[in-house]
Image (cartoon, rainbow, N blue to C red; front, side, top):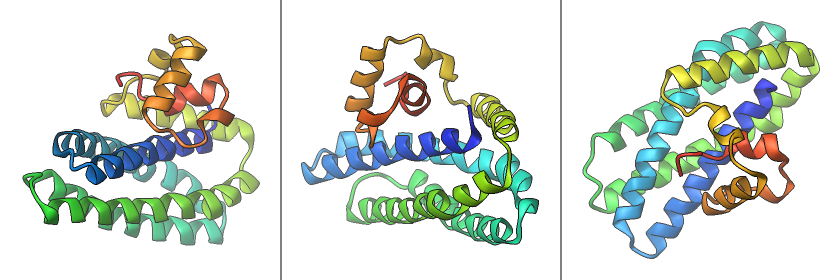
Length: 190
């Protein structure tokens, strides 16, 4: 899978979690908010690790523009990591905790949008499809090492099951996704 598609799938999975957190907050469902936040923390830790360990170092030399957005991305990760660690260490029982999660959501939404709109376009222009696919395989393997479910788990599901999970997980853009995109985006564990 193309590395940019894999990273966008991660972004969309987290966007779905953000939507579910906001829905739970609006209905004062602290149990769901807590469960979703645990998933957000797990997803972000894995995603930031694969970007910093593999993706950023690989793409950084491609152009000065990419180098600049990589440097900014690393700093945005620094902010997100601090928030993730603070949230993980807090009792999920109040306004301060929920406010911190919302700040994390805003920061990550900005970061993901910037990557997709600026960095990914430049990376696509400066790299070959073959190189992006090879990099995507490295990223996918590292995700599994870090505890993410292998995409093969989702590929074992029927198209209808993938669509249903994408709906349950509030995956944005799911109606336009093909089977592989759905499998890369959903969390097959639920």
